Image (cartoon, rainbow, N blue to C red):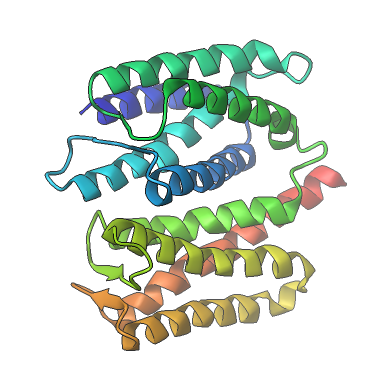
Length: 285
């Protein structure tokens, strides 16, 4: 319940700031996507793979699932929403004025989460979290002018990689374990079924995201529909290979849904590319 309360509070704060219209929707989407991308890198590495700490969210009777639910709350909602809030307060000439208050706020919040049993340290401590909060928030203070003002903007391949990762990841996190549990990857790389599924799903999705980030900026507009279609088919081909290899398991899933699992996010990336590219041309001319 504590994760839900915090999400509601952060969401209300963020919405109130968005309503001030100090940030364009391009900056909001960029801040969210970059926030998810970097949060995922750290969370999947430190929590899921290295097993340094866990999130007992008390929202599931299965401890494996409830930790992943905690990752979803933290990585895809609370922390990225906080980045959008942070963008409203940080100043280019005085980055520490916003960095330290936000870092202190999250250090205090984590302390109470640990004391109340919503974060469990295994090979971790609050001191490590404090250093990570200060370093990561200061890093976003450095990025803030590029995200807010587009003068100059974040390099497009970096932004496209972050957005592609985010949109492909969200589909997998929603329909695979632990939310709807409609399919799962089980290549037996990890003993933990959640780590096995999420690592495989994220890695395969990030291969497609990297392809998009590298090639999309170089491809003429008239060929982009073809490119995105081929990229989606690469994802489908991987899924079919995994399925017939026995390490992609369908529960309430089928091949048609798996095709949609790749085509829908890839075509959303295509639409984002059109939207963002047009905005950049307008801002830079």
